[in-house]
Image 1 (spheres, rainbow, N blue to C red):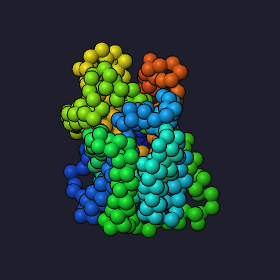
Image 2 (cartoon, helix red, strand yellow):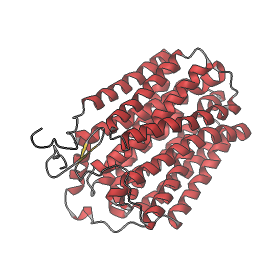
Image 3 (cartoon, helix red, strand yellow):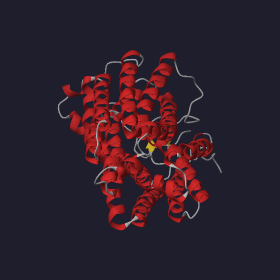
Length: 430
């Protein structure tokens, strides 16, 4: 017999952070195949998410190096340029997620990609760090992450959703890996402008993909017809403790990501002696090797039935990576730290959205995804802007301490989350 849900009602499935109010499957990733339309939907949206994230990720290993040569560049301005897109992303995720619940997902996605492309053009033509900041702000105004994830949930059945979210998570990991290689290669041939022009082309390709390949979801009830319902959905999504833990986790993850890329490219160039045009030769093998570690964590969580353990190991990988970055006196310690960081980041990036989609109510999924994405991009903005300020004011040790503190608080939150009851009740008389 399945255990009773502590939130009331019927049986539940448990994850590392939350009780989920629906019947428990044997495995999270089901053995039943997707329907043809689900396969098309997931493949199209995973490719769309991959092209968009590729454009965002490509500048991560570049800005701290190439923009540093611009007049008036400081660590704070470089951090602001790195994380500026996160501010407008954070401000607009909830409004656009809310809007997509009412006017439809696809119009919001197309409009967001147009803004993303415009910001890329502005950044490509910039000759100052301030111009890049403006372009990144416009890129962030295309805040469609929450709408994309809500559309994915609309187009898949409940029992297929974890599988679909995992596939999108894998596409994000592939985009990250490709960006670490493609970004330095493009920049070596034309600098940052070439990277931003390529990003603008990716935005146009994404629009074509939405219009030609992504299926339209079934019509949803008009939430606006029920007075006060929108505010109720926002309040429930904002103050739900299980969702709040997920919001804090993704905030921390992206804070640390941006903070690390303020210093890691310079460490590769000066500490490991790797020319900036050849950084991809470090990122590529490290990322490929990280897939093995990510696979072990996914198997532990899904097949081994220990999602909390896998989550804590992923967080632990981030902590160890930060420690190695601070202690790295040689290139192999730096490379090991990069491997641990990518193992933890890729696994956590794939796991957290799935948990949000299953925790939120069906009618409020767009709102919950909006809050989740807001937390993600606030973390990116804070990691760049606050991280750059800390680096400029107090040095790399202060930046590392801030990252370690946030990550430790996240781990404590996971440890203190209510532990689920056993999935199998003891037999009578035992």
